[in-house]
Image (cartoon, rainbow over the protein chains, first blue to last red):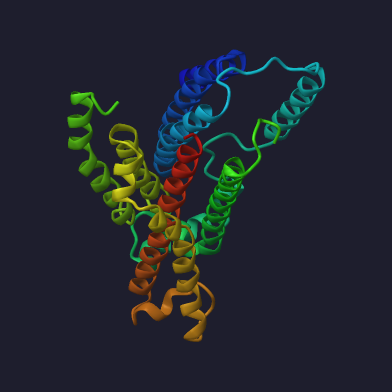
Amino acid sequence: MALLTVLAAVAIAIVRQRSLFGVVILSGIYSFVMASVMVVLDAVDVALTEAAVGAGVSIVVLLATLHLTNATETAPVHTTLLPLFVSIVTAAAVVWGALTLPPFGTADAPIHKHVAPRYLQQGVAETNVPNIVSAVLADYRSYDTLGETAVIFTAGIGVMLLLKRRRRRDNGDMPGPSV
Amino acid sequence: MSQDLILRIGAKLILPFILLFALYVQFHGDYSPGGGFQAGVIAASMVFLVAIVFGLKAAQRIAPKALVEAMVPLGVLLYAGTGIGGLLTGHNYLDYAYLAADPPIARERGILLVEIGVLITVSGTMTALFYAFVERGR
């Protein structure tokens, strides 16, 4: 609960911060707190990913992006009423949907009755891999992981093409900032 | 930043351990938390550290740009190729049964192979993204 309070405080600080450098640093803090929450929930694999990706690599990439753009957020041109309305409605829908979920940690919740028992009971015997997360990720749900890897590949290729094309145009015969 | 002695020595001391930790997370992922995604990001962060402390040229001596960009599709191909191996030997796609006679050992090897594929793509993509951003800013 204390961690979730810190999480909410950091999120509010991110929203109110106008300096993008501060936003980047705060989002790193957010990721670290989120990783701690995942450790508390016994999801150590997710926590490791969150700490490495969210708090580590993405901060460096975001700082590199700040190097290319302005470091302060411009004031919004439109009124914030419509986004606020959409956010509140979405949040209300999520909370309303979550009300009917079984309480956290219930042993007979549907997600613990479907395929999870078989993975836990047969997983080590079938795959020789004691870490069930790895077994599910790379064996039972191998198609999904192939898709995830393809997503990373696609995103990487996309960003590289975007940044490189712009650069070539800068070096071309178009003087002035009128691009 | 390359003039800062403490930073340079400290980075030099910590670099091999970052790489070692990445390999540990990768190959011990069968027994402890971790796997290709996490290991790939940690390995890429080692290259980031080199680039930040010693400069982009030093980083690209360790991880040449051409190699990094080749790794992006290579990992996906290794992953998908592992699946195609199953098709060629008369099994389902991504069925690892052809890798060994004993099914559990075959699946263990299959997991290892696809995790290496994930490692290659993730570390390559992260490093290539970093290079793209940094070189654009020059």
